[in-house]
Image (cartoon, rainbow, N blue to C red; front, side, top):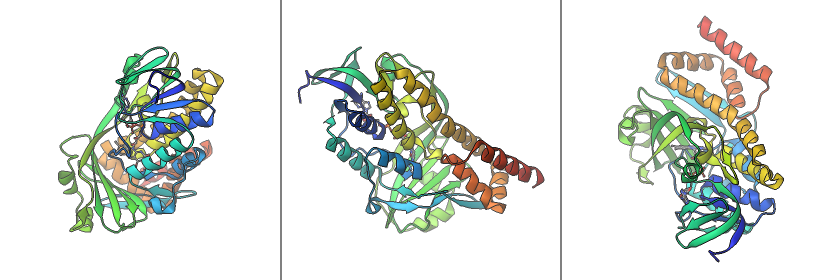
Length: 370
Ligand SMILES: Cc1cc2nc3c(=O)[nH]c(=O)nc-3n(C[C@H](O)[C@H](O)[C@H](O)COP(=O)(O)OP(=O)(O)OC[C@H]3O[C@@H](n4cnc5c(N)ncnc54)[C@H](O)[C@@H]3O)c2cc1C
């Protein structure tokens, strides 16, 4: 690798969004170099649930997830002490798989399509048309900041982020046969638990709370006796790791010849299960904009892509903050499961304005008449 060289596109960060941006740019015919400070496969605390549309977005980038890579799930289940409702996706299935497996598949695809990959190579600075690494400087036409939630690229180009809400998370894996083919979202008094099947004998559990202490794994587990019972005696297959999940937005996601993708460009709370899909779709939109030589086009598409998940994220966090209302909503869904299925369909991008109005009105009516 010639670190005094040149490239068309330089991607800073090799998480899912950076790899997707590199693949999409290669597919569009650019010469692409990517650098990440870590080495693959990169692990990160995650719910590890890919929605059906995320699988489609991966396929569009030429990334195939084999059935043996993870476990298919048919929908989402909301559950709390006094209420429970499950809904199936309108079409397709989600896939639960270890984050490291997803990373391996993305890295393999990037390598196969000719992306130059620089691991353990943190980017230390950027200029108008170059990036600097400890080993040297590379001249580039476009710079893509895919360096995650605390993006340094974002700071270097002077774009501020507005946090709507931050929550704390911890994650662990357990060796046990999944007991459900839904991703379960359990609501407790101070924390939430997400349970995702990720293998024939493995589940991923994430605890999330607005309070960092309440999100500590053991403490949060105490709020969910049903989960506690199910995993009693199961071998722990990963160490506890913590993360912050946040809803944050930016006024702009590009400046000059630098564009931001994935969590660096704004994020949705983990509860939406949409973070990875957004990064993949932004990557494709960015490649098209670079071909057109017009990052304003990306700015516009980025805004459109973020609207639905951000709206759903706000709604779900609002339910999280209002336990009484949440109970009534889950009970309303429980008595009319088709309403929950329709809401889930809208969440994953199926459903017209008419569906939204119809479902909203019926749910509102059930809440008023309950
Ligand atoms: C608890 C939790 C649960 C979640 N569950 C789900 C889920 O179930 N489904 C889903 O779709 N999404 C989920 N998400 C969201 C998802 O994990 C993120 O949206 C996704 O990781 C964003 O990917 P990214 O590539 O943008 O950022 P990251 O994954 O953060 O990758 C950024 C990369 O940039 C690198 N980097 C940083 N600085 C530099 C530098 N200076 N030079 C070089 N490299 C650098 C880092 O090493 C890292 O590899 C969850 C998030 C959390 C916190």
